Image 1 (cartoon, rainbow, N blue to C red):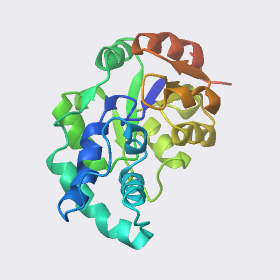
Image 2: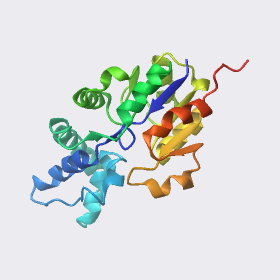
Image 3: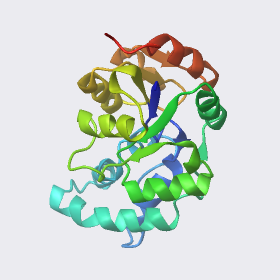
Image 4: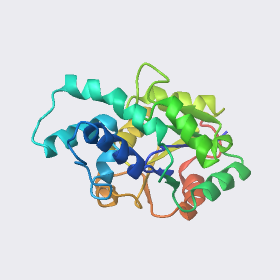
Length: 226
């Protein structure tokens, strides 16, 4: 079965405002204000909680060592879990594009560096969990993207075959994951890091989810290689 695997944050859903709010809460509760901006820091949000915490410390002039970030990270996760879908929305056309792939006989799954439990909750809140045949998160396996193992697991758990799959993402991490797995990569150009996507040299760029079906048809072989 031909398979399309998606990243989650910044690819299927704009989660940046809720992520930044959770990181800011770690500092606000100790009287340090709101060091991160929900618009200008969206790119950092899609790089994960630790990246946001490091940036916040830099803004405050208190370069945090990794021990401090490690202590703060569970606090960030707690804030995020309690407010996971206040502002998060699917990108326009995302649901329709996934449904079209399923009708055309594709398997679809998610490979994300968000913890699996949080990804499950968010997809359920957004009402789309049942559309995906697999979900592999940052803590599903001992390794995470850009290692190829999480991607391969997402394809296989969806019932697909890695050589007949593609990864749709929004970052250098996704590009490197696809390269490690030996599969084509499509990077989206509607997120905050859009200008950087062409320089990552993906197999295709996608500016709108209406383009996805045609890209999948072009990039994924119909028959397995002999």
